[in-house]
Amino acid sequence: MSPSRELLALPNEVLMMAESQWIFTESELARTPSILDGLPPEKERENRGKGVNFIFQVGIMLKLPQVTLATASVLLHRFFVRQSMVEAPGRPAFHYYSMAATSIFLATKIEEDCRKMKELVVACVRVAQKDPRKLVDEQDKEYWRWKDNILHNEDVLLEALCFDLTLEPPYKVLFEYLNYFGENDNRRLRNSAWAFINDSCMTTLCLQFSSRTIAASALYAAAKHCHTEIPDDQEGRPWWEVIGIDIRAIKQACNSLAAVYEHVQVKNGRDISIHERTPEDGSGSTTKTRARYSQTAQDEQTATSGVIGDDELGAAEGSLKRSRSPSETHSRPTVNGGIQGTDATNGIREASPSGDERSQGEEKRRRTANGSVGINGATDDDTTANAAVKNEHEGHAADDISEEGELEA
Image (tube, rainbow, N blue to C red):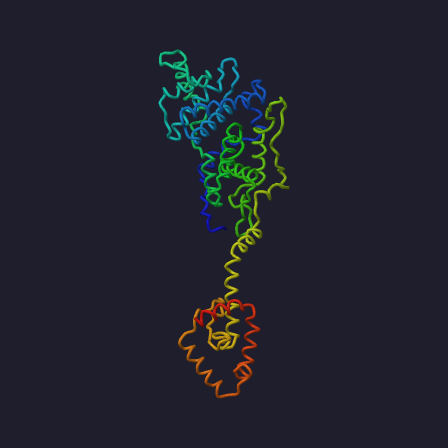
């Protein structure tokens, strides 16, 4: 596990139990009251999307946070699982616009982002009339019609929901995942995952998967979109197993979300598919979002190889220094007979000899005068030593010449 990872918060069992009561299969969603009353499934999905779009437009006018709008969309989807959009004998039809306005009114209370009733009604009238600058007076019939519908449908909505207002927005779960994997500073990944959750509100994804699965699928789709790989933990488990989400559920949620991006209308009038569906059998595509543990460990070792190399280099230089003789490590005779100090570890030469080195050089010259002198005025031993030192330090000839000039000066 990376050191930047924080502890992942455990899921709330109460929220998970309450949310599981609103999870349905595809076959169950194919038998909603509206479909059973004769409304085509495609038309029902289209009306749901129009209702969510109405919620978003009103929320933008009221400057409501996205979490509140997502809560309102979940309430709307859950309501139409119990009630129908089609009018039947002895039963009125519930229009998706009026129920969307009521969902906003209830969601502002749940998320404690309340707005005045007048502001909400005026925004609903403007969006319904498709006139964002329409002047709406409190005495208008349209104003009172929307207000009465909202107040009346609030009781209907609460009854259909069985007063179950326990929700866990996937945005909060996504933020926990990003912090845990150390990707909270990855702006492109964060914004992409956030946008995928926004688009999931247009679909019935909240009726098929839990909020934690939706957040994981948004992170999965964003990682593929941004070409980001999330590293495994120290045990080699992929990131979806670390957070306890089945990869098959993630892929199913991504493919359900792909319906939003398929058959996009282009300028020439053709419908094209701009989303590549993910295989749900576990083959392929998962490696695009996963950095395996062996690869992660190798990258970390490569990143720290500079520090390890310095330590090894220091140990090698220390061993070389100990293997050298004292005369080679601390002093080296020059052409004019002076002693030049050296640093064997770092290769840094001193500018001038110290007092002890000068005294040692004078004593050595006196011993040379009393002994056998060679052709250049040095003993045989000194001549041999000078030849060895010259061969060893042949690469530093230019430095020696400059240093000799400084010593003579």
